[in-house]
Length: 441
Image 1: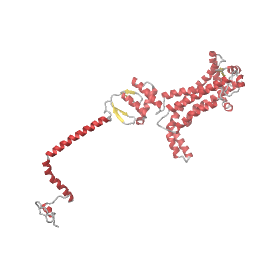
Image 2: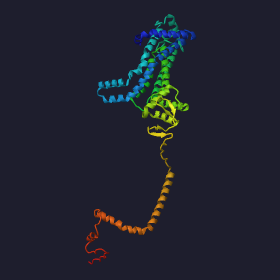
Image 3: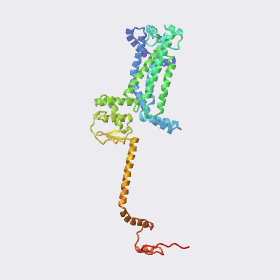
């Protein structure tokens, strides 16, 4: 660790100068030798560094979302060229170049603050060993060695011996209790930060390996902080705890106001935006207008939460415009159901309603009514048939002729001569036939 800290010694002087400037300011309030003056100086250093890293944090968010979007395409490339690793890497680089994404962008904030972290560690290590470093001279070194945070010196570690802790004017119990509490708080803040990223700000409609990696990191990072934290001085733990709390708050702000499309955070954001928009009948913030503009531009590619938002505006008599503004609408407006099926609302054709399901008693009563109606129809048809019986007898003869016509090939009889020629021998031609006498055996 000392070798790594020495490698970043080029930034030790600027870091020590910033700490001394903050210490001179807080020393006038709390006293120059107090832990508050030195502890708040470290906290102010963290805040200053993180403010300077905000542009990199924004770039990290964009890169992370771009990587989430590219996960399905990356998976296809891996499956297509699973036997050719060189071609697989070439296609990956080509995909990154076409989309303008960089996998390392998500690590930029951590990489950017690493020099400050190791420089601070080098400064605190010099305080523990009684060595002047950077702009911290002998008087400032003596003041820093007297500073305690809740009874633990700034340069003390969890793994220090009792003699070394006693040389700093503290007890081993105080140092280990304070460092253990700070390590637990540091690990818990890291876990909560990663957890809210996974549960609220991830597109639930897409299952990618990237989500599994993030879920694994949610448990790996806290363990790493717990293992390495016992070797950090108290001042470094103050630095790392402050930066974790800053990251957690910064992420909560981003998730609330700029959520990932398709995530639970987007559903909550659009619900709040719909409530405010329908109440004021306009969109006030430029950020909200940009969100509405992006939703309108998607068209039928909107997700479930975005369709609900557009439908909510339509029900309230409002219409979203292409520039992100919202205006009142009196004409019929197309609305998309949750499944994407277009319907109409307003003054247009009403939406088709599905028939209500009848209860068992209603179905039985309807069946009984149909049976009674059928009995009435049968009785009426039987009475009509009994009254019209003579007419039916007259119609029997042409009806009987039709099957004979079919049996003869469907041709019509040419005349009476053909019918007489087909008469069997021993029968009279025409007229009624005599009954045959029984044969005598």
